[in-house]
Length: 203
Image (cartoon, rainbow, N blue to C red; front, top):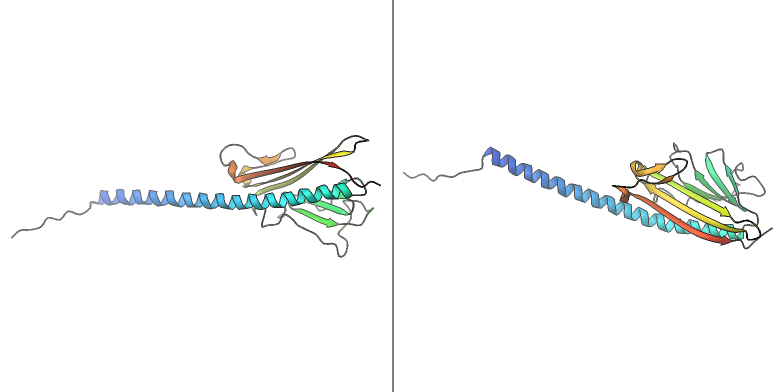
Protein backbone atom coordinates (compact mmCIF):
# COMPACT_ATOMS: atom_id res chain seq x y z
CA UNK A 1 0.00 0.00 0.00
CA UNK A 2 1.42 3.39 -0.99
CA UNK A 3 1.15 6.44 1.27
CA UNK A 4 1.15 10.04 0.11
CA UNK A 5 3.61 12.02 2.19
CA UNK A 6 2.22 15.51 2.89
CA UNK A 7 4.45 18.00 4.61
CA UNK A 8 2.84 20.91 6.55
CA UNK A 9 4.29 24.06 8.12
CA UNK A 10 6.54 23.71 11.10
CA UNK A 11 5.97 25.74 14.28
CA UNK A 12 9.03 27.87 13.50
CA UNK A 13 7.71 28.68 10.03
CA UNK A 14 4.32 29.61 11.46
CA UNK A 15 5.94 31.86 14.06
CA UNK A 16 8.01 33.60 11.38
CA UNK A 17 4.95 34.12 9.20
CA UNK A 18 2.93 35.52 12.13
CA UNK A 19 5.80 37.85 13.07
CA UNK A 20 6.13 39.18 9.52
CA UNK A 21 2.36 39.66 9.27
CA UNK A 22 2.26 41.48 12.63
CA UNK A 23 5.08 43.83 11.62
CA UNK A 24 3.33 44.59 8.33
CA UNK A 25 0.06 45.37 10.15
CA UNK A 26 1.90 47.64 12.61
CA UNK A 27 3.59 49.55 9.78
CA UNK A 28 0.31 50.04 7.92
CA UNK A 29 -1.48 51.14 11.11
CA UNK A 30 1.30 53.61 11.98
CA UNK A 31 1.14 55.06 8.47
CA UNK A 32 -2.63 55.50 8.65
CA UNK A 33 -2.36 57.21 12.05
CA UNK A 34 0.34 59.58 10.78
CA UNK A 35 -1.69 60.44 7.69
CA UNK A 36 -4.73 61.13 9.85
CA UNK A 37 -2.69 63.33 12.14
CA UNK A 38 -1.21 65.27 9.23
CA UNK A 39 -4.69 65.77 7.77
CA UNK A 40 -6.00 67.03 11.11
CA UNK A 41 -3.06 69.41 11.48
CA UNK A 42 -3.56 70.62 7.92
CA UNK A 43 -7.24 71.40 8.44
CA UNK A 44 -6.42 73.11 11.76
CA UNK A 45 -3.80 75.28 10.03
CA UNK A 46 -6.25 76.20 7.27
CA UNK A 47 -8.92 77.24 9.78
CA UNK A 48 -6.34 79.14 11.84
CA UNK A 49 -5.07 80.97 8.77
CA UNK A 50 -8.57 82.07 7.81
CA UNK A 51 -9.42 83.18 11.36
CA UNK A 52 -6.09 84.98 11.83
CA UNK A 53 -6.52 86.99 8.65
CA UNK A 54 -10.00 88.07 9.73
CA UNK A 55 -8.81 89.07 13.20
CA UNK A 56 -5.78 90.93 11.89
CA UNK A 57 -7.90 92.84 9.37
CA UNK A 58 -10.46 93.71 12.06
CA UNK A 59 -7.71 94.92 14.41
CA UNK A 60 -6.21 97.09 11.64
CA UNK A 61 -9.59 98.67 10.89
CA UNK A 62 -10.35 99.31 14.57
CA UNK A 63 -6.94 100.94 15.04
CA UNK A 64 -7.39 103.15 11.96
CA UNK A 65 -10.79 104.47 13.02
CA UNK A 66 -10.48 104.54 16.82
CA UNK A 67 -11.05 108.13 17.97
CA UNK A 68 -8.56 107.68 20.82
CA UNK A 69 -5.18 106.04 20.97
CA UNK A 70 -5.03 102.41 22.00
CA UNK A 71 -4.94 101.45 25.68
CA UNK A 72 -3.53 98.26 27.20
CA UNK A 73 -4.34 96.67 30.55
CA UNK A 74 -4.58 93.41 32.47
CA UNK A 75 -8.05 92.35 33.62
CA UNK A 76 -8.94 90.64 36.89
CA UNK A 77 -9.50 87.41 34.93
CA UNK A 78 -5.81 87.18 33.92
CA UNK A 79 -6.39 88.55 30.46
CA UNK A 80 -4.27 90.91 28.41
CA UNK A 81 -6.61 93.60 27.14
CA UNK A 82 -6.17 96.06 24.28
CA UNK A 83 -8.82 98.75 23.84
CA UNK A 84 -9.35 100.59 20.57
CA UNK A 85 -12.18 103.02 21.17
CA UNK A 86 -15.08 100.95 22.45
CA UNK A 87 -13.68 97.69 21.04
CA UNK A 88 -11.70 95.53 23.46
CA UNK A 89 -9.51 92.55 22.59
CA UNK A 90 -8.88 90.13 25.46
CA UNK A 91 -6.44 87.21 25.45
CA UNK A 92 -6.53 84.69 28.31
CA UNK A 93 -3.03 84.43 29.81
CA UNK A 94 -3.74 81.98 32.66
CA UNK A 95 -1.96 78.81 31.50
CA UNK A 96 -4.10 76.69 33.85
CA UNK A 97 -7.37 77.95 32.39
CA UNK A 98 -9.30 75.66 30.05
CA UNK A 99 -9.65 78.52 27.56
CA UNK A 100 -5.99 79.56 27.79
CA UNK A 101 -4.86 81.42 24.68
CA UNK A 102 -8.42 82.21 23.62
CA UNK A 103 -9.22 85.60 22.13
CA UNK A 104 -12.46 87.45 22.86
CA UNK A 105 -13.64 90.72 21.35
CA UNK A 106 -16.31 92.75 23.14
CA UNK A 107 -17.65 96.29 23.47
CA UNK A 108 -17.18 98.48 26.53
CA UNK A 109 -18.35 101.99 27.45
CA UNK A 110 -15.74 104.72 27.18
CA UNK A 111 -13.98 106.50 28.83
CA UNK A 112 -14.11 103.63 31.34
CA UNK A 113 -10.71 102.01 32.03
CA UNK A 114 -9.82 99.23 29.63
CA UNK A 115 -9.01 96.53 32.17
CA UNK A 116 -11.55 97.12 34.92
CA UNK A 117 -14.89 97.43 33.17
CA UNK A 118 -17.10 94.37 32.80
CA UNK A 119 -19.11 93.64 29.70
CA UNK A 120 -21.94 96.09 29.27
CA UNK A 121 -25.52 94.75 29.20
CA UNK A 122 -26.35 93.67 25.69
CA UNK A 123 -22.71 93.65 24.61
CA UNK A 124 -21.91 90.70 22.37
CA UNK A 125 -18.69 88.81 23.11
CA UNK A 126 -17.16 87.35 19.99
CA UNK A 127 -14.78 84.39 20.27
CA UNK A 128 -13.20 84.23 16.84
CA UNK A 129 -10.79 81.45 17.79
CA UNK A 130 -12.93 78.75 19.34
CA UNK A 131 -12.50 75.05 20.04
CA UNK A 132 -12.99 74.24 16.36
CA UNK A 133 -9.76 76.06 15.57
CA UNK A 134 -7.55 75.61 18.62
CA UNK A 135 -6.58 72.07 19.66
CA UNK A 136 -8.22 71.29 22.99
CA UNK A 137 -5.04 69.95 24.61
CA UNK A 138 -2.48 71.80 22.55
CA UNK A 139 -0.27 74.80 23.09
CA UNK A 140 -1.65 78.10 21.83
CA UNK A 141 -0.97 81.81 21.92
CA UNK A 142 -2.04 85.06 20.33
CA UNK A 143 0.38 87.97 20.40
CA UNK A 144 -0.30 91.55 19.31
CA UNK A 145 2.91 93.56 19.01
CA UNK A 146 2.30 97.25 18.34
CA UNK A 147 4.94 99.92 17.77
CA UNK A 148 4.21 103.59 17.15
CA UNK A 149 6.50 105.98 15.34
CA UNK A 150 7.16 109.36 16.98
CA UNK A 151 5.10 112.45 16.03
CA UNK A 152 4.25 113.88 13.63
CA UNK A 153 4.07 110.62 11.64
CA UNK A 154 2.05 108.58 14.14
CA UNK A 155 2.40 105.45 12.05
CA UNK A 156 1.75 102.08 13.70
CA UNK A 157 3.53 98.83 13.03
CA UNK A 158 1.36 95.83 13.91
CA UNK A 159 2.50 92.23 14.14
CA UNK A 160 -0.18 89.65 14.91
CA UNK A 161 1.19 86.21 15.74
CA UNK A 162 -0.83 83.03 16.14
CA UNK A 163 0.82 79.85 17.43
CA UNK A 164 -0.79 76.47 17.92
CA UNK A 165 0.48 72.90 18.17
CA UNK A 166 1.01 69.81 20.29
CA UNK A 167 2.05 70.62 23.85
CA UNK A 168 5.39 68.85 23.60
CA UNK A 169 6.31 71.00 20.59
CA UNK A 170 5.00 74.32 21.89
CA UNK A 171 7.26 76.91 23.52
CA UNK A 172 5.39 79.07 26.01
CA UNK A 173 7.30 81.43 28.24
CA UNK A 174 7.39 85.16 28.87
CA UNK A 175 9.81 85.82 26.04
CA UNK A 176 9.07 83.33 23.31
CA UNK A 177 5.80 81.75 22.19
CA UNK A 178 6.53 79.60 19.19
CA UNK A 179 7.22 76.07 17.97
CA UNK A 180 10.29 73.99 18.73
CA UNK A 181 12.57 73.24 15.80
CA UNK A 182 13.58 69.79 14.67
CA UNK A 183 11.64 66.57 14.32
CA UNK A 184 7.87 66.86 14.63
CA UNK A 185 7.69 70.58 13.86
CA UNK A 186 5.04 69.84 11.24
CA UNK A 187 2.64 69.35 14.16
CA UNK A 188 3.04 72.96 15.30
CA UNK A 189 1.97 76.02 13.35
CA UNK A 190 3.05 79.66 13.48
CA UNK A 191 1.18 82.29 11.48
CA UNK A 192 2.50 85.85 11.57
CA UNK A 193 0.83 88.80 9.87
CA UNK A 194 2.32 92.30 9.59
CA UNK A 195 0.85 95.67 8.67
CA UNK A 196 1.87 99.31 8.61
CA UNK A 197 -1.09 101.43 9.74
CA UNK A 198 -1.86 105.13 9.46
CA UNK A 199 -4.72 106.35 11.64
CA UNK A 200 -7.60 107.94 9.78
CA UNK A 201 -9.45 109.36 12.79
CA UNK A 202 -8.01 111.55 15.54
CA UNK A 203 -9.41 113.41 18.54
